[in-house]
Image (cartoon, rainbow, N blue to C red; front, side, top):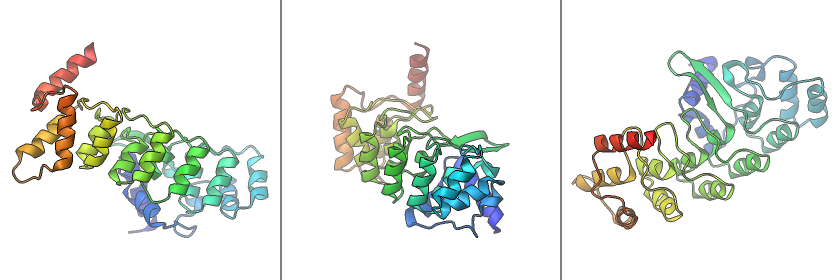
Length: 273
């Protein structure tokens, strides 16, 4: 596979909310250096000169180029942003310099194609859940929205849950992450946790006050997913799921729950009220 095809694949995955390659790079600490990921493949001058100066941590040169009227918050070819290019160099000092010089930590990567149209992913929604906690904290320090979104409207909290990253989970909540923000399917973080079998996160969120009764566009809910596991003799309904079930019943949520079809009707009625 050529380098160009690899990068196109990366941004296609981003556009679908499946930031597998990028997340993998961030988790293992793999930088995409200039030879693999050259700035001039995605940007024109003077942005290329600016980015290379930032990468060298040459503040004076970078500021000189910026002061000529350079807009740091743009989408280059394939929709990549200057900030994301720097982030992918795996250099915290260069990333902070980029932010200090005016890069918006919430400006999204953009991708468009015939299948999904135009989609956006903000930096925090891309890097959350990886192993670079310093980068997560840095972006938040410079104003990244803890409720940033990716192409499917999932939040950083969803990524922390999917990656079983309790440290990022706590950092994001402390920074103001909304436990009940929903993705395109109507799932909040607790329901997402159940979908990806991260039941400890679901229990924690419900105990902290997250809505336990949201119904997704498919008619799914925490209760329906638990009941499916409990009803399947091939699956183990362990103590953690028993705790969630007891908590749902305590909160007055019907269990066994209505069918997904019935819940879709309930959801439709609630949306018209």
